[in-house]
Image 1 (spheres, rainbow, N blue to C red):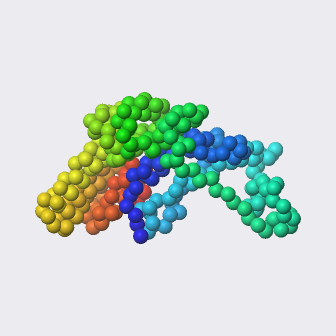
Image 2 (cartoon, helix red, strand yellow; image 1 turned 135 degrees about the vertical axis):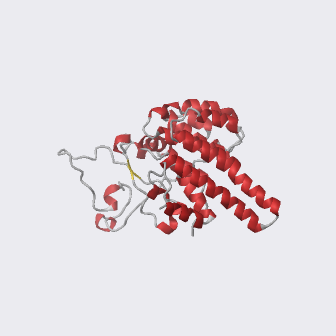
Image 3 (spheres, helix red, strand yellow; image 1 turned 180 degrees about the vertical axis):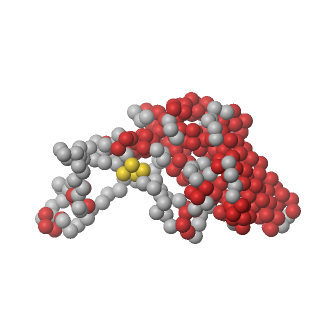
Length: 291
């Protein structure tokens, strides 16, 4: 069963989908003892492809999966000596068991970080020594729907300016503005003005996705359905707005719309259209978008 797109999850995957920002997040959430054992150099952090998700579950997406090496993990000859058992990865000096028995007892402890918890409030983040961009992305994830978002918007955009110099920074900035458009009470003209600094084609993507879909297209479809007073009218109005918006987004992003994709869009469900619109920000190819 496919779930409706979740703007918070989508923003998290986009915002922390680079090794640099993964490193910044891990420095914030991991216990010091564990952090000291890991090599958090972004150049050595590897993000795993989420293509292993079954196609029938693609709408739910996958968690971010990253691989972080241990400090001093390379041997003298430069090769990695990979352990062959889980217990070899974990030190258990306080377990009073015979070694022969311990070898058959896997042990795994998870670090669960509640990003909405009191240890990650705005004040706590600002008092930390975290990298400012990663800190701000997490702060936006927490506070975008809160009452202070409008007052903090200019400060957030200023702290995120270094993203303009990153290879995928334009896409991340676009995701930030789309997320704020979707969940915050920040006046839309302020967000649109900030989008003027986005590079192309991210600027076009934002203007279409945020302004037309989230503010006009979808709302017009819902209003039309309510005015008609019929369930089928509401569904048809919403679906027509989504179909029109997706078609424009595809042409803006990929400069083409093959005939077979037109037919697929026309036959799609509302849930599929919503999922494809959400994916337009991160899809590299048409095949990725409609996978």
